[in-house]
Length: 223
Image (cartoon, rainbow, N blue to C red; front, side, top):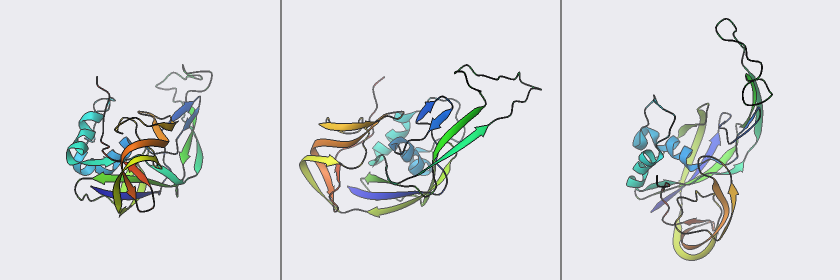
């Protein structure tokens, strides 16, 4: 197996709605491996069409192509991050739509909101594990605004081992073989992530002591 350590540097503000609290839409400071997988491999392996006729994602069909190619992308943890708070307000055009002062979601204007976005210069780290050498793009687009992200990838030396260990990188619990002994949960859609996970079993130990579970692949609930 080949392991690439990927350093992701934001060159735009990055926004996706991890939590919605009234008029505040908050972006979390972890990047989900589903989003990273689409961003890194959409042009070559996944090939999602530009036009989508529906809103239901097809994760098993899309990410299953990476399973077939022997590729797995871990979620990304923050190395350095900051936030921007952006306020937006949409004008109400009464000549073709009835003005709505308050929306059905609560006692606040429907056309007003605030977005808490990750600031440019924030840095994240993830790992790409592949069966064969795989070229990665230098630049990718992520988030609701298709924000520009620089990808710096370096190959890692590792040794295979087995036994108890603590994983420094966040994990998608569906993709990890076995059951973690202990962990903290980062709540985010579509699958909450695990951090500070303690596991027992086969793993890859990198040169800096970082341990990554062996045998990870994209798995999805049946039905």
